[in-house]
Amino acid sequence: MALVRKIIAQSTVDGPGNRTAIFLQGCNIRCAYCHNPETQAMQDAEAKEMSVAEVMTEVRKGIPFIRGITVSGGECMLQAEFLTKLFQAVKALAEEVHHPLTCLIDSNGTVPFARHPQLMEVCDGVMLDVKAWDSETYHLLTQARNDEVVKENLAWLLQHHLLTEVRIVCLPKRVDVEVILQNIAKIFDSIGEKAPARLLRFRPHGVIGELANHPMPSDEQMAEYAALAASLGLTATVK
Ligand code: SF4
Image 1: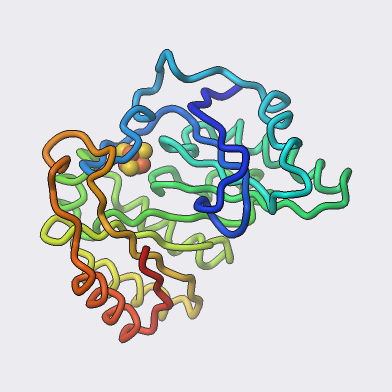
Image 2 (image 1 turned 180 degrees about the vertical axis):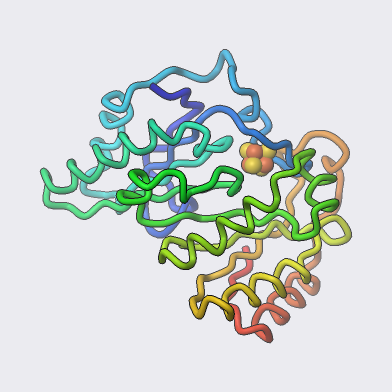
């Protein structure tokens, strides 16, 4: 069983193509710019306990229009055992209906993927948020101290060809975007593998707290980040 906050039957913004997006309840960090603060609590009256079979009933409805599923949160890796069973069921369904389905994870990277080999066997990729590089900046932004795990996950996923995309929320003066890009490029170079980077413009919509009225970075600022990424040899898209 997992605590599910919501399921979007067909989403085009949660990974490549049309996908069923499943949002699990509960997160282990507290990002100041969180767009889904209602998913942070480990329990919530709006969330529903669902079995793999119940979630699969929703996934089946998307066949043949979906390319797969993406599980997000909150932090979905906090319910890794459920994810393993869900992904196994999706792969079995793909065989049954002769329709390829990929299983992606959208994660803040604070749970070590290497400790979940069975899950990684049936996972097609991870979209990994890199929130900050410097530990203090990470702590100020997330109230957490697990940034080293994120970096270890970045390298591990890349080595295992499971890094679908690195995501960076661009919030000038609060997030060290330039430093993140430089360090990601270093890791890519040292491993000899690459993954696309997605530069997400901070948007105050849905954000509560001190950043609720914070301005979005300008087009010029986003273009500067993209230019830096390109100069570092990264394939980056701005969203
Ligand atoms: S990791 Fe995601 S769900 Fe958790 S607090 Fe940060 S933005 Fe919100």
